[in-house]
Image 1 (cartoon, one colour):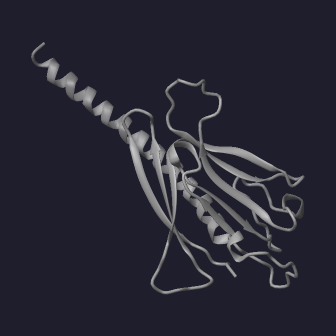
Image 2 (image 1 turned 30 degrees about the vertical axis):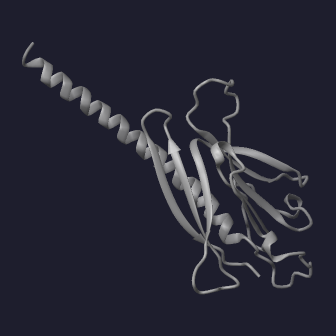
Length: 195
């Protein structure tokens, strides 16, 4: 028994570390997927066709960050752009067409909300990252992209060099397994199309 106890403890520790590593990899992979979708939308913000004749009311309508508007004080972001002549996709993979726009403008939004289907008072593994886009009738539809998001923070980075057509946004996600892991991940994205 004296020889077996240290061996069993080492084996149990090894299994626990392997499970933690796999959870960390899964959460990181989910966060990278979210960053890819949010980053693609930020890069598209403000895109207009070169021959577009529609006048827009204000230049700040293309990307709008609302602070502390979601689950646990998370931020939300709404991005608008015209659709190109090529194939564009919204945040859930639908091909953007004229039917999926409102007055010729495609919309995508990202926010963190309470997980759906969980009774109040029950312990949850963070919130759900929600993607909002327009359906074929131009109505807003919300789709859950992933669970396990504690919060989403979006900050505009003010640089010393003023560029009227480019803004930088820092996107921070905290992913959680609801027990031991809380991963803080940060990425920075630049707009490309602002007028």
